Picture 1: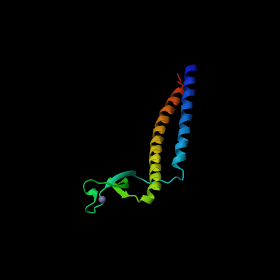
Picture 2: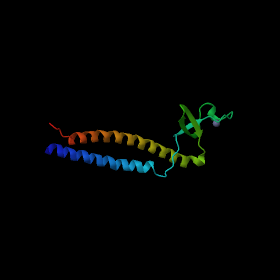
Picture 3: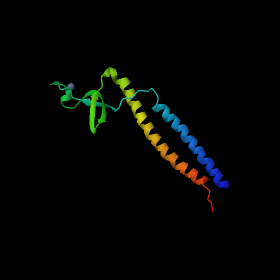
Picture 4: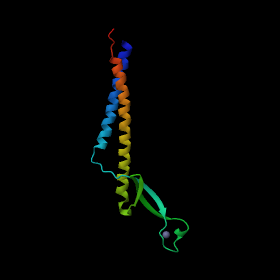
Length: 126
Ligand SMILES: [Zn+2]
């Protein structure tokens, strides 16, 4: 009896810890923080002008945003003036994606712990 009581307590503490983590994730996901879907990628391209060094090798730095749309990879070149804020919102998007994955993981973990808590509380009628 003693043993199962301390096990129960530690399982309950785990649940409380999960709830704390969940609260943090929900806070981010429901915040007013804007996001832009897609990855921020620096690439080098050819400009197409004849006689430019880039005829041999792409040398002109360009920043692209790329994202999947209905199974197709889409790209858009980001204007230099927009790089900073687009990068920030793209990073925010990554954080949101991660938070959603973490939330799913927490839910799974919690479900397992709750199952064991219920098992520990279960009495047999014999
Ligand atoms: Zn060039």
